[in-house]
Image (tube, rainbow, N blue to C red; front, side, top):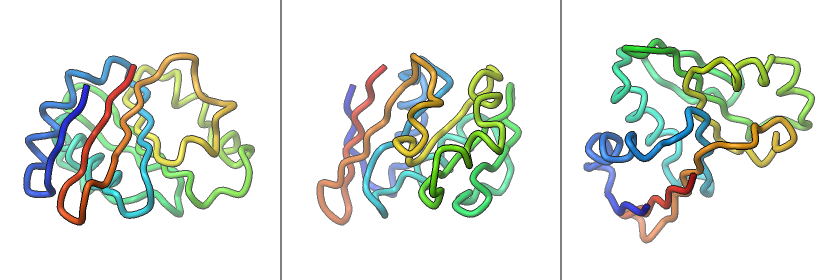
Length: 135
């Protein structure tokens, strides 16, 4: 599944994307500044959260209350080794049944479950992004 969008369309694209996320563990791939956190903020809103969503770059994980479940947003960009994820109980979050949105998942690959959804963000130009969803 693919979607093309601009920042102005982010809430609409989050609503269109959500039904295509067949696993509650979702990996977001894309370069620095491609809009991973911005898309996750829109998804958290779409899931009914009124929490203030921010990047967990330094805390590694931020929890949010959605309408029907908790949502965990991970950002592993700054970790130096996979054990840092283990130290925060990453595996427990993954198997909690709650939403887990993960940025820079390639840094914690050995802890990922066998099944997850991948959302790849591709920069078309400074205004447009393309999402490629695979389950």
